[in-house]
Image (cartoon, rainbow, N blue to C red; front, side, top):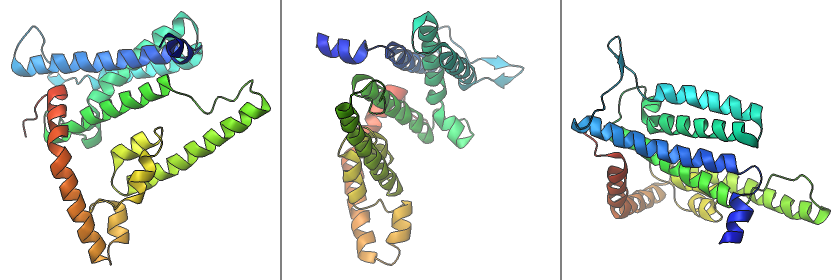
Length: 245
C-alpha cells in the first residue's frame, strides 16, 4: 500500500490533482449540506441575494474555477502556488457541478427531478479523476526508452479504441458507461455492443425499420430500469436530497 501511494499519489506533479479532487469532493459535500439546511429552515444559513436577485453558488464557482485554472497553468505542477490554485479550482468545480442541472436547463431546477443530473455528474467526475489519480497516465512519453515508448504506444492505441467505443455507447443512450468506459477497460465495448436504449439516436436511426430490434430494446430497457432505477434514485436522494417534483 505504501509503495502504491508513493508511486501513484506522491509521484511528482500529482499532488495538485490530489488536492483538486479532495477540495472538489469537500466543496460538493459542504454546499449540499448547507443547501439542505437552508431548505429545511435550520441553522444560520440563508440564500444569498443582491438587489432581490438570488445569487446561485455556480457564480462564485465559475470565478474560482477561472482563477484556479489560469493560475494552475501559469504556476506549473509544483510549488505552493500550484497547490493553492489546485484547491481553488477544485472548490470552484464543486460549486459549478453542484448546479450543473441549472446550467443545463437554464432554470432553477436544483430541487426538481431534473436536478438529479447534478449529483450524477459530480459522482462521475469524482470517480474519473480518482481513476486518473490512482492509475497510469498513458500520454506522458518524456524520457522513455524505445521499449517503453513501444509499450506506451500500445496503451495509447488501446485508449483511443476505448474512446471510440465510448462514443458508440453514448450514441446508444448509455452515458454512464461511455464516461467510465474512457478509462476503465471493457466497460465501453460492453455498452457499445449491446442493444441501444429506445430513445437513443442510434435506436431512432438504426431501429426505425426493425420493429423486432426496437421491441427487444424496449423490453431490455424496461427490465434494466426496474432493476436499477430504484437503487440509483435512493443513492441520489441520500447524497443530494429529495426532489420536490
